[in-house]
Amino acid sequence: MKVKRIGILTGGGDCPGLNAVIRGVTKPAHEMGMTVFGIEDGFEGLVEGKMHELTNREVSGIINLGGTILGSSNKGDPFHWPIDKGDEVVIEDHSKLALKNYKGWGLDCLIAIGGDGTMHISEKLSKLGMNIVGVPKTIDNDLEGTDLTFGYDSAVFVATEAIDRLHTTASSHHRVMVIEVMGRYAGWIALGAGIAGGADVILIPEIPFKWDDTYRKVIDRSTRGKRFSIICVAEGAKPFGGKIVVKSRDKKRTDPIQLGGIGNLVGSKIQKNTGLETRITVLGHLQRGGSPTPFDRILATRFGTYAIEIAAKKKFGYMVALKGNEIKAVRIRNVIKKQRLVPPDCQMIRSAVKVGISFGNDGFTAWR
Image (tube, rainbow, N blue to C red):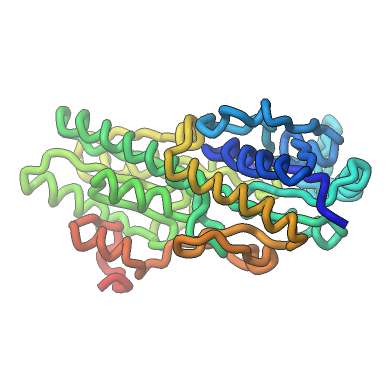
């Protein structure tokens, strides 16, 4: 039988480019005679039975819009469903409800747009009998199997612009400026924005930094007449022999750890131990909001159209991926085996070191 009824959802946190994927799936699907149903609020909608049919009119003119017209949630894991019972939160498995709705709606395939968490859930749902096609989304760019995820370029653009603006006030007031960016356990955003924005120090999770080496960099700049410094720090960065800074824990999330606070720690210690006036900026959700860059609009559209193409061919259990300049399909089960972290000896880091950027660890030899 032909694939006729398609479900689509946006799992996890929002990011620029989601609407471009929805459009990229829905328009060609209609041309193939398929009906597309938008599942609302990510996997929550799949469990709670919230969906509606997507029309051409609804997906027209949305390629430039940030966020997602379907809504999203990072607390809707069907296998880790939180039930608030007043004095405690109980975690239950509601995957059977998700499967019931999938079958009740008569879906032939579910296109799940999301990051690492979404792909883990998708693989589990595949084993329950759902036909899944994945689309890689995350500003963190930490999803294995694809050279890039959409959303990353937009986040780097925002972070770079922020660093550009900090440069002018840092040079005017002769300050050290610390900017904390997202990325969780991967340093891709900090690395990309740090290089593009001309940061003097980049601190990422993959290379534990040393306090003395970080102090030395800003002091050396100050004594050589460079009266300001820019430090771009990933939220998952940690000192050598230390731990990541945890802002809070939320039992309702599959990964309960919410990172944040390393920027404030770095800024306060630099000011205390160097005597240099220091200010801290935490970008937070600004990196996930706003319109996608042209690159992300194009990539998201290519992902969406290829996702419906392989769905029509009944190539289920796969995620679309960018490989070089081509969009290909990779097994979801292979994608979730590990996170895509920054290789400490990669060319981007080597290039950064050659232009004088410090990673706060002068003894690290991987880039020599």
